[in-house]
Image (cartoon, rainbow, N blue to C red; front, side):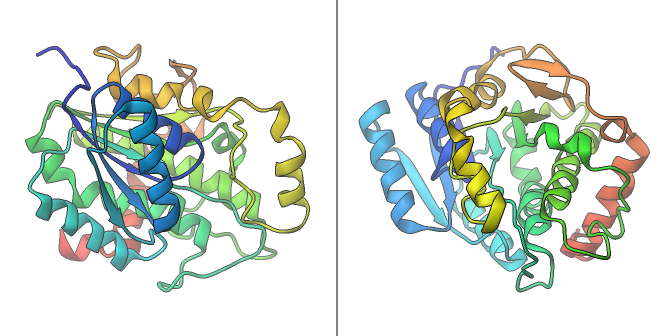
Amino acid sequence: MTWTIEGKTCLVTGATSGIGRAAAVELARRGARLVLVARDPKRAEETIAEIAGKAGTRDVTLLRADLASLAEVRRVAAEYQALGRPLDVLVNNAGLVMTRREATCDGLEQTLAINHYAPFLLTNLLLERLRASAPARVVTVSSMGHKFAGRIDPDRLEPGGTYRGMRLYCISKLGNVLFTRELARRLAGTGVDAYSVHPGSVATRFGYNTDGILNWGSKLIAWTRRTPEKGAETIVYLCTEPRPAGASGDYFFDCRARRTSRSGSDLELARRLWEASERVTGLSATG
């Protein structure tokens, strides 16, 4: 069967700003049926209006959730299941970086919770629907920052000592790469492919939720970065290209499979992180 995005159902997180929003607009323009997961209803409605204006469709379903909460992730997964629709493409795009430690309602550090544990749990809760919809795809937005994560302990992703927000961001992005590797291994032969993506340095609101030097730095260098539309190109490519130039499990940048860091290619580390993430999210207790 030839892959086409037209008529396919795409679930996109973090689609109310930046590259997520740009990707959602372009996917809708190409005929995809969108389901957006968003926390801010005002920005969600603005996104739906932009999709209507640029893609000529309001065939967009909105699911509200705060992905910092594991219970909210479970709820939104259940709400999607209740829609009774196939799931052809899942785009795990939501993410953030913090300059000071903030704990979620589950006691997890916020960056790790939203960037790694949320997409891990959401994808797993929707695996049955993805398999039933095969051929299907999971696209998870990572970053070249994964190369600066250094050594990680899967059982304790947050290092002790002084809080370093950018280090945790890089660790979470390495988590995305390793998650994609192990997901692809587990889904081999099912017709569900998994890819991770570096969108490039993009001029978005990313980093604006922080304070101090990181906030000002994000605003100062924004003019040197690529547009959200350019940053979204590889996401759209992996959602729409019949035969992406790479294998399931690969890490992409500018529509080509690229090398990861040594840690990002460590299959044993990927397995250990998966098992540790099952324990943290409670997935191992529920299956």
